[in-house]
Image (cartoon, rainbow, N blue to C red; front, side):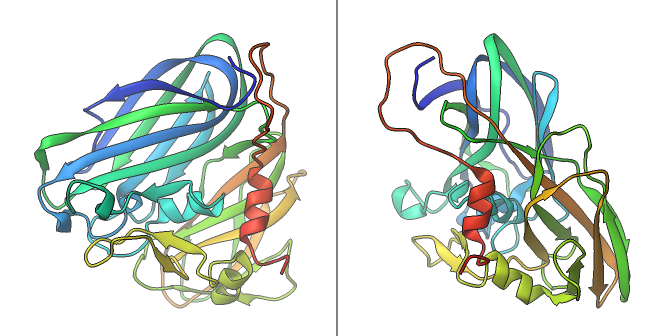
Length: 330
């Protein structure tokens, strides 16, 4: 493995692509050991019509789970996933909250037609895999498209980015779910005690992607009082055109947004995990289900193997990216 950034293609197939029915795919592949900075997924497909997917492609990502050498490193489960909404997807909102550019569609102007999609996912990992052969298992689920794919079908590629200058290990843990009502209630999020590091942020999802059913959130570790969800969006940087997504139709480029309706990413400024859970008070105007997904980071140093050397480092730090994207430092 080289002493700088290197990209390796480890899997290609034409099976694990979306269609007109909800679908899940479970697969695994071998990959070389080294300083694994990111897992990059390239998804390309041709729909029967452009209107088969109204919003950005992240809207149809229902679940993604990655297990590296037996360790679960990324576990995302959507509460809302649909091809019929012309808004930013929750999955894309979540990934881009960990650093802009982690979930991106290529605009149709750069493709053969508006029915074509080319979508990229960059999952932060930050793991030193042992030399030799490692194993990555994945589970990927899609919501249904309006119609089956065009006869050209689609393709998925899995790439690994090796980078000895990575600075953080990133773990997206299992979500804690909670049934809420139209009142104020306490929500306790279980934090994994067997994962080293600190809490960089949390994703709060609700099962309503068309209206904000949560009015206020008090994060006990940060505030003595409940704060309006728009204030949380302001502090997270969302309000300052902090969201970007490709919405087809008349658009030929990325579009800025100020919110992902019903979903909220809250930076927690590397909160220590200690021997306690994350406690919140949530005030809602209706009943529904929410989930809280933790993002845990810890410092790490890559282990490059002796080889030809690049002289410029590419330092990646998810904890710093979460802080940079928020408005807390303004």
